[in-house]
Length: 144
Image 1 (cartoon, one colour):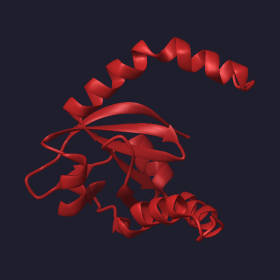
Image 2 (tube, helix red, strand yellow; image 1 turned 180 degrees about the horizontal axis):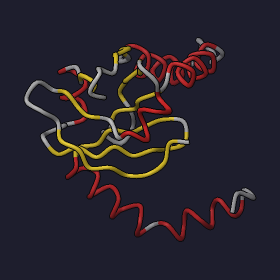
Image 3 (cartoon, helix red, strand yellow; image 1 turned 135 degrees about the vertical axis):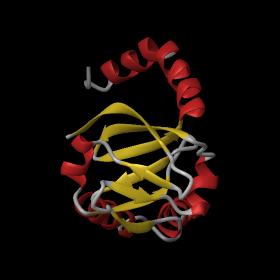
C-alpha cells in the first residue's frame, strides 16, 4: 500500500531517491507521467497496466476523453530504479511539475505523487481547509 508523505531532494543530475517503503512496492521499474494539480504521477508496472486498460476503454469520440488520454499517456515514461533506489526525472516532467530541489513524495493508494515542496505545502493547506466539506460529500456517497 502506497501511503505517507516524504521530503527528499532532487540532485543536480535530476535524480530522486525513492523512500524505501515505496521502492519495495513499486519494484525495479516505474512509470512516471504528468499528473493533476501540478504534480507527477508514478505507478508500478502493474498499476500502470490497469490505468492503460481503463484508458483504452474510454470513448474516442469524446474530446475530453481523448484529451485526458493524450495528457496522461503521451507524457508517460518508464524509468528504472537504480541500485541506490533513485530514479531520473526527465526534464520535460521536471518542468511540468515545477520541481526545484526540495521534493515531496506522497503515497496515494495505487500511485506516488511527486510534488515541488512549495507547491505541495500550498495545496495541502487548501485541502486541509476544505476537509470537512469533502468529508460530507464522501459521506453522501456512502464512503465515510
